[in-house]
Length: 182
Image 1 (cartoon, helix red, strand yellow):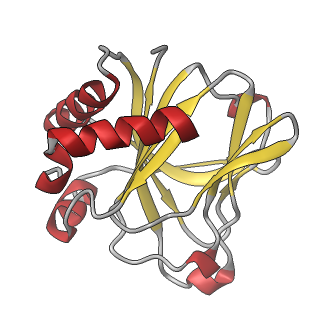
Image 2 (cartoon, one colour):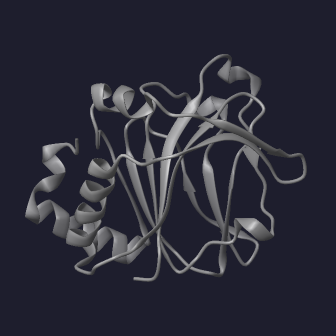
C-alpha cells in the first residue's frame, strides 16, 4: 500500500533527518488513488458534535495490515519501537471543525495523518494547526494521499480549521494515528 519510493533505506534516512530537525515531515503520494478509495470503504461514521468544541464524523480504523505497515515504516525511520494508542478515520464536510480546548492537548509522541482524499482545495479550509505558547508552530495543509508525521509534545495543542461553504459536497477524509512516547 505504501508507495515503494518511500521504502528506500537512503530516503528513510533523509526523512529521519528532516523529522529530527523540523519535528514534522509531509510525504507526498504516499499511497495511490486506488488504495485511498479502498481504505474509505466499509467505514461506519458517527457524527460527534459539541458546539463549543467540535463537529465532525469519526470511524474506528481496524485495517491491521495498513496499521502494521505504517508502524513498521515509522519504526524504521526513528529506529525505535513505538506503541499505537489510537487509530481513527475522520470525515470533515462543510461546517465541521475542531477548536482548541482542554481535549485538544497533544501527548509526547507521534501523530500521523494520512490523507485519504483524491481531491482537496486549500480554499476549503480544513488545515491542521499546532499551537504552543499561544503561537502557531506548524500548519499541515491537506495534500491528497500524503502522509504527515509530527513529533508532538504535551505543551502543544491542535485544531482543525473550519471547513467552509466553498467545499460544496467535497469531504476531507483522513486517518489519524497516535503513537505514545518515543
